[in-house]
Length: 213
Picture (cartoon, rainbow, N blue to C red):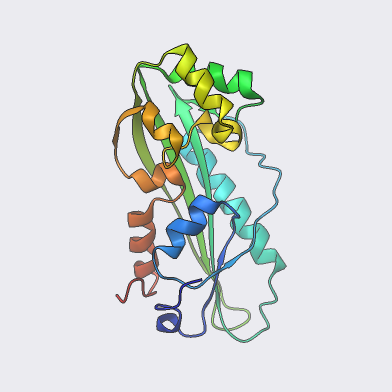
């Protein structure tokens, strides 16, 4: 991982609770040194939650899961960054496609209309001393994505590339799927996996240094 800001936060150990290549790259772009420790949770949430509440709850569960695995008696402090992203069309959550037929159906349902992408983030900054409370905060980004009018054959060709297989909403804005999009309103990084401007603000509000500030 990149080094420039590693010493700026003292002996702080940063953990990204995700193995997503997209989140890893976004965090690397901030020149933070961190380790990757995916959180294995069952992603169960209480019924009746809105899409923003769902991503915040899942991010919280991921962060707490990683916290439970740490040996806090060791020297140093930890910052856990956990996130969850989902796509919602008219408040209906669109997860990862079950198969490629489902991916085609999902993408055609997004044709010539807008949808929202939400990414929830949960930060946990462990206490200086055992017995003291940890700092934590939860927030989310919301980006509106407008898909152009799609033709079935081009959607089938895109799905055949395999890119949509593990993507919420069955497309990747940062990949081949960019050709499906007419425009977006809001933060592009949020669609990719982290609301970077919000993340930087929250980290600085917690007293941490990012990109030298």
